[in-house]
Length: 176
Image (cartoon, rainbow, N blue to C red; front, top):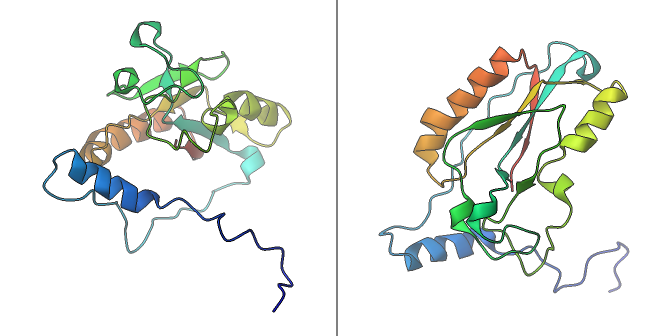
């Protein structure tokens, strides 16, 4: 039977990331595999006004570049030293050098050269100038220390408080 659809080749399948992460945690010596956060229902709040009239915040897991922390450039090996452990914020009117060497991503199948994939602030400024939305005065960095408890009890409430200070209507979360 010939396909009538333009399917990808059989070898072009998603990486088995969840299985690999469970195995990685067990190999590190944890007594149980990593448990992914998932919920029966997800909260949803429709926008109170059209997006073009809303203030949008950028939330990223990218780390500010730290020159004393080793290689953090595109394709750098995993660099735990470049991690950060508290929420940070920055001025959206300025350019920022953020990196992702502290994240465990698939370095074999991506080059990590396009910073818009983890920190699309220049593109968001362009879209805001076009009137698609108002850009919040600050962006926020969400730590990736792999603790669901700390994320839920500390980091998420801190980011929410900062977004409320900035009178944000919606947020774009760009995890890496």
